[in-house]
Length: 397
Figure 1 (cartoon, rainbow, N blue to C red):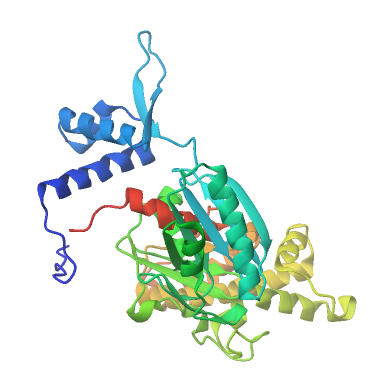
Figure 2 (cartoon, rainbow, N blue to C red; figure 1 turned 90 degrees about the vertical axis):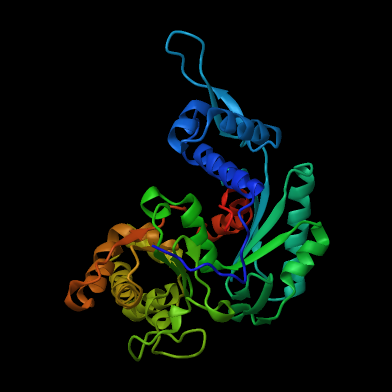
């Protein structure tokens, strides 16, 4: 495909630019294929051995890679290259609607240490806890942390580092990035939670996802967020508000209202809150008005509770209906589902796929749906990715 050059944002390909690109290529081979030898890198990339050696020496000096010994086949064990993962390089903050996590990671994206606490609707109280936890982890790691990534459930102008609004906390234009940067002295990057989770899939997801250039991530929590990846890049649209598919209309008279108070949008039909509302409706006579968390709903459904399974499967149907609209309009190679609902994948997968496929006109484009494999906190991994991607991303020309 021929891509038109954006003359408003272009870097001329000077000799040092080419060297930087080769450096990123070699570093990514170490990240994805390591432990790997210099000879194998030269063979795969078709770069000269001398070029590979010079760049590897630089990566060793900067502490991004380290030499390890491979298995001996009878002689001297071969020297291989691996990412240096013995210390923290980034701090991630997953600012959620109910809980906030502050954690450190190494170059591979492994969580090293974390602190978790309830998110207070009072901005100052939450910022105080975040800053205290951040300072503790930064000081403990002796200056090895290079940057901070923040994932949050709101509208973000990520290129400016500004948060416009976090609806569920009723925070408008909160100075999150400025406050944390001022308190820590470290560079701060901020992203919407669904976009952050999509970025994490791009960098840390299974190969069936990370090797795909066009995919959509559907992040299901008390609301629904979507991260859209086109040609290996997060698509943000004008004003950075692309991907707000949680408020597309798919019916009427949903079991709960969405964050905007409407009963006709995807969020009102397919969110965690919708599933809990269905379960409570099914068991009203038995349980009265007792409330249950979505995590608990998943637990009892997996244990065999019929009402819980019914609530999850009905919610899964509407997850699939929404995904069919995304598939019909954007034709992604893969749609990834993330959130606590993934724990119940054995119960909901068939319903999601059936509803998504049956709503596609003439069975094209094809539906390909996968659960996220990033664990319980895909948005925390996304926060890490905001910092780590700078080390591994290719330079745009």
